[in-house]
Length: 523
Image (tube, rainbow, N blue to C red):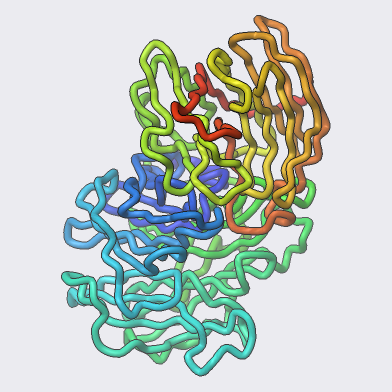
C-alpha cells in the first residue's frame, strides 16, 4: 500500500541533506552551521513521516565553535553505513576541518571526531566499495590555481577507515558538467551496476544551483559527462517560481528496489527566504545507465506516492513538522530539536520540576558572535504564531528576557521584558532599533509573535484578553536575500544582562509554544 509524501519532507532550516537506507529504516542528517548541538539525525520508515532521534555532535569536544559567525561551523555532512557501523563525515570550517565520527546506533552516542590529515576543501563524502575499500570524495580549489571564484575540482582518494587516514594519491577526477562551472560541490560517489557515479551540485547554492552526474567504470576515472546535465534544476523556471535553488542531492534505494533522491530547495515568500534551505524528495529511475529524476515531470512535485507501508512515529517521538507546546514545569529534559548558539555555557538553562525553565541572563548581547543564552526551534511555515509565558519576578533592572525571531546575530526581531516594560526591537546589520514600548505590570507575562509572510505582529496576553503591541513589521531583512549566509530563521527564548553580576540573574519561563496558522485575523 502506497503512502503519500508531501514536499518539502523536512520544512524549515534543514539544508544539505544526506540520506541512507538501512534495511527498512531511513536515516538523514543536515548541516547545522554554528548552532548547537550539531547535525540533527532524522529517522523514517516511509519517507513521508520523520522523527528526530538525536544529534551527531552533542559535546563541545566534538564541536568546537568558539565565536564564529552563525553561518560558519558545520558544512554539508554525509551519512553512510558499513558492516554495522554508521559513519558521518563533515567539515567544521571554523575549527579542525574535515572529520569522521562513528556510532553503532544513529541515535548516538557518536565518537569523538577523527580529523583527516591532508583532506583539504569541504563537502566530504565516503564510499565503501564491494572489495571493502573505502574512498574519500571531496571538493577543493583548482590545483593549477583558481581562474575565477568557484573554480574548484572534485577529487577522490583511498581512505584507511580503520585509522581514518588518507592513503595513496588524490586524483582530481571532475570539475563539473558545464564549461566555466562555478562551485562543483557536495559530491557523492556510488557504485550502481557496472558504473561508478559522481553526483554533485554546481552553480552555487543560489539561483543557478543544479544537480549533475558523471560516470566511469573505474573508481578514479576517467569520468564521462552525462549529455543531459544538469539532470535536475529549477533555475530555468525563473525567479518567480515558488520553489528555487534546487541542488545538493543524495541518492538511495529502498528495500523494495526503488530509487529516491533528497535535495535542498527554498520557498521564498514575496521574494524573500526566511526559512532557509529545506529538504525535498524526488523519485529516480535509470535509463541507459543514467539517473533520471522525477521522470515525465522534471521538476519537484508537491506530493509523491511511495510504495511503502505508512509509518507514524510514536506519541513520545520528536516528530518533524508539527505544532509544539512546551510546558516546562512538567518536563525533565530538553528535546533534541532545541537549538542553542555556538558552545553554550554549561547549565545556562535548567528545567526545574514544578517551576519551569530557568535561563541565565548572561552579559552577552545578541548582536555579538558569542554563546548568548538562547533556546529555540526552527521556523517551518510562512505563517505561524509563537508564544511564551515569562515570570518577571527577580528580573532586576538591566536584566532582559523574552521572545526572539532570529536570522543571525546581525538580523533579528525581539520582544523583551526589562523593568516592567516590553520593548520591541528590530536589529538590522547589527544595529538595534526600538520600534515600540508597552507597560507590563503582570508577574506572569504572555508574549506572542505572529508572522504571516513578510509581516510580523506582537501581542501581550492577560487572562483571556490579548492586546496588540505592534503590527505590520516589515521582516524582509530577516531573509537570506538581505542578511546573507546559509541559515534559516529560528524562534526562541533568550535572556541577557547589561551588567556583570557576582550572582547571575535568572529568567523563569513557564511555557513556550509554536503553531502554524492558516488565517490572518490579527495581522
